[in-house]
Length: 339
Ligand code: NAP
Ligand code: 12T
Image 1: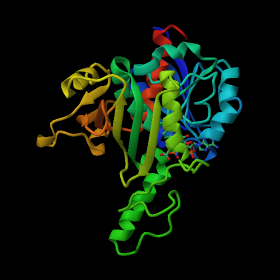
Image 2 (image 1 turned 120 degrees about the horizontal axis):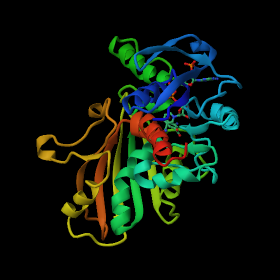
Image 3 (image 1 turned 180 degrees about the vertical axis):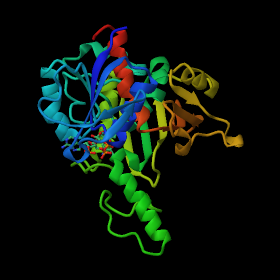
Image 4 (image 1 turned 45 degrees about the vertical axis):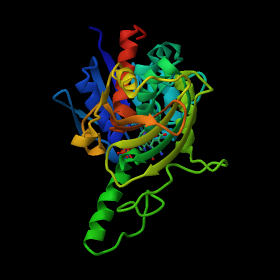
């Protein structure tokens, strides 16, 4: 089998670390791995397929001979370096928000729109973590009944905001427990330990946050349907890894019973139903540690509208929300013979 030179930009971050793990776990055919980061991490050693690989400093010449470049070092790095990687002949799979809504860049969740990968002009975007796990559950309902509207509230882990954000939750918790108080918040707008914060990313003129509008706009793009409306409230909770979502989905056509909805959800790859509430059968973020699958539970009829479904959706935001989806896209390039 053909093998590829793969660069990971942001290799030492929480997402980049998972990307390298995913390349290994999903057996992506890598002939050479090039981990890239800032000066701070130069020379750091990473283990990949039982070999030690040294982290290199990202620069303009980093992409010579690279065929696939996975980016996860923030929007401004992608803005500057993704075009350079493409110029050097690489296909970029970008995990930042920078190119997601660009009309020349496909935005892909393989279980939903794998065919869009072939429209790429060098860059393919990975959706926002909250969007990715949600669209997995929407897909079979959209196909069978149509969806007119989704109301979603998220409960997002600190890992979504990077390593320093996770450290803030840990250190603040310890400091409070040791009677020293929370200290001054740095990565978050307010205390995150023992609290919840109804703000992720910055506020827009319409009163929503950027994170909330990403869920609206990215979902329309992934389904290729501007009439599919999502209205979101995104909330940060004191969880390290794993985002949860409460979804209220309004279907266009009536469904018979919840068994029919369950049957449809069961057809989605990498989506698992855990729904025996009486026996503690519902997913929680802790249980998504090291999992690539997304979980749904608490599936019930939303009696407040004519054809509504309410459900609970949980996923490891570093996997389906980032690294797993990115390496799935890389595999699509191979399987669709685009590389
Ligand atoms: P993180 O843990 O803070 O890691 C940041 C990574 O970027 C580190 O490897 C860091 O290298 C590298 N980096 C920072 N500045 C750099 C520079 N000037 N040159 C080269 N490398 C640089 O953050 P993370 O959570 O992994 O997230 C990284 C990005 O991924 C975010 O900014 C976001 O855009 C995106 N993201 C997307 C999703 C999603 O929803 N799909 C989820 C989470 C994150 P050093 O260790 O050397 O500093
Ligand atoms: N602000 O990739 O803070 O659009 O949890 C992902 C996660 C942006 C993104 C977060 C964010 C993104 C967060």
